[in-house]
Length: 226
Ligand code: SF4
Ligand code: SF4
Ligand code: FES
Image (cartoon, rainbow, N blue to C red; front, side, top):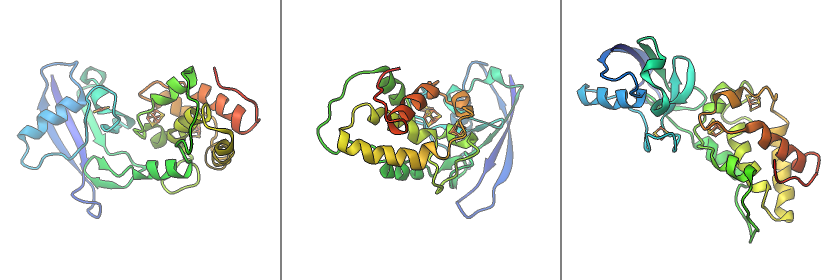
C-alpha cells in the first residue's frame, strides 16, 4: 500500500515549523503509524524526532496529532487512513523538536494537586482506583479540551484521573487540601462536555471518576465505589 506522509518538522524550539512530505511503501495495512515512523527513520539522513517506548498503548509516549486527531501512534493502524497521513506534535505543549513535546507541565500540575500519600494510608482495590490507574498521562485529552492550556489554572482530565484515585484512599487531613485543589483546578474549569472521554486512548470511564470526585470534593459525600 502506497502512503503519502506529511510531517510537521521543527529543528528546535525556536525554529519555524515546516511540512515535509515522504512516500512510503507499506507491506501491511495493520501496521501502526509508529512502526512506519520507525522504519522511515532508518532511510532518512535527518530522522524524524519522536518518542515511543512500549509500542503497546501502555506508556503514552507516542501521543501526537494524526490527521487532526490526538492519538497514540502505536495504536493508529494504516488501514484507518486513506493512504494519506498528516502528523503533527501535540499543540498544547511546547515543541522540543519535530514530534517531541515537553509535557512537564503535567507533573508540575500534579505537584500542585498533591497527588501523593503524605502519611500512612489505607489503600484498597476499587473500580475507581482501577479506572484511574489506567491513565497514561499522554495528554491527548488536553489537546482537545477547549478549557486547558499549559500554565492555566484548569488542569484537565489528566490531573483529574490521578486525583480521583488518591481521593479514594487519602487520610482525612490531607483530603481537605486535595479537595480544595480539586475545586480550584478541576471542578471550576470543566465544561463537562466529555469530549475528553471520546479521545482517551485508554478508554477510561471519565464520567464515573468525575461523579465520584465531585461527590467527595464538592458535595462532601463519602463515595468510593462506582
Ligand atoms: S485521561 Fe486518557 S487521554 Fe487523558 S492523559 Fe489519561 S490516558 Fe491520556
Ligand atoms: S469535559 Fe470538556 S472541559 Fe472538561 S476536561 Fe473534558 S474536554 Fe475539557
Ligand atoms: S509507545 Fe507506548 S503508548 Fe505508544
